Image (cartoon, rainbow, N blue to C red; front, side, top):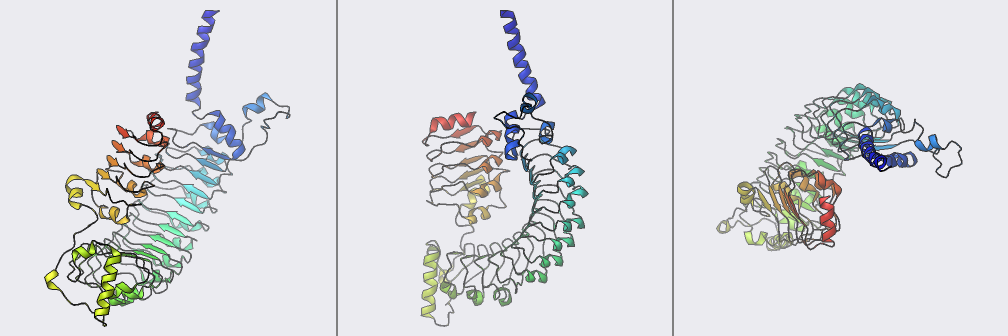
Length: 515
């Protein structure tokens, strides 16, 4: 009898291993999905999707095979079609044609895998509204994908796409299209047929934009940053709903003229070759709240800048300005004025370090002194403001260290990340601030960041995006308000040390982070 028990124990373990190999998805998850219509299989290391997932709404569940009386309390026969399937952050290289067995899918998320192709049967998912394919290795898309006319959101960023067909224009209900971080050299004219609200074309190889893009009357956000644009088509001015326009890191020499963009709130043109700001470029931007022109070659800021009465943030960092209009002091909503890195001769350096409020008061006083608003040159106080004065750029360039500690800031300003956008950063120190959340732009440093210090802040949660920092070796979370760490941090394969002392539940934190 004892020998039988020992044998049964061995067989039980072997059976468990075998079952796990056959279906790495717990049956309880499948059972729950039949009732909720949602199945989350993200981050499970899957190299393929089990057949039981595709056949979820076809095969009779185990409960049905055991109880055919229809009197059980489990009510297994009451199933809901699967409408949401999350397969992100796995190791999928292909997707089965059996995906067509889930025709009721509304959301399909397969981002962060290793897909090189998609099955033609994906075109059978006619109810699909949200398709997330970002962070894969796709070089082309099947013709059938353009039949998904109910799509409202299509994310294709971080793939290897070099071109898109005119058939893209068949997705007539599409509102959100992300094509960033691909290898696109052109955009099809059929893009004009789409009902887009958000379009991201950043980090491609575009040298121009098709004039047809102006026909998208509902577009609110357009991001063309980090391309090779030298001009922006004049017809872009016809986009009456545009609210945010990003043109950073291109080869522009002038601001675009946008006379019909009455609702434009943010215009980002940093890191270009803009030398002149014409009055024509400014007078139509009455709704603008953010104008970002850092790292250009602007020599003169026209007095008509005061026409932008809604302006809240003006960034002129690292240009060639020797003076600025005193009228800036009259802008009623201006909260942030960045002038670092300009050869200013009319503003003392120590005044600039006191912040925007004191700077605006100074400009207002100059207007009172000189009713015509023209500043007096003060050559004896000539001073070139330091580039990226908020941080030590010498440390960034020589030590690969970004230090923004002991500032008592509630959030890390965008200017800090903008300043190091073209630098290699291996170490970040944001300790001794008042941060209640990890700055999401830290992910921009994911390719090189190995050491981060977030100690002595007010962090209560670590976002899932933190797991994208795959080069991390050391992390310091000491003296925060953390009670747990996300399980996704286990994917940080190079992580060697996590300092968690003086948090809310240090012991539990340590255990969770080591599981």
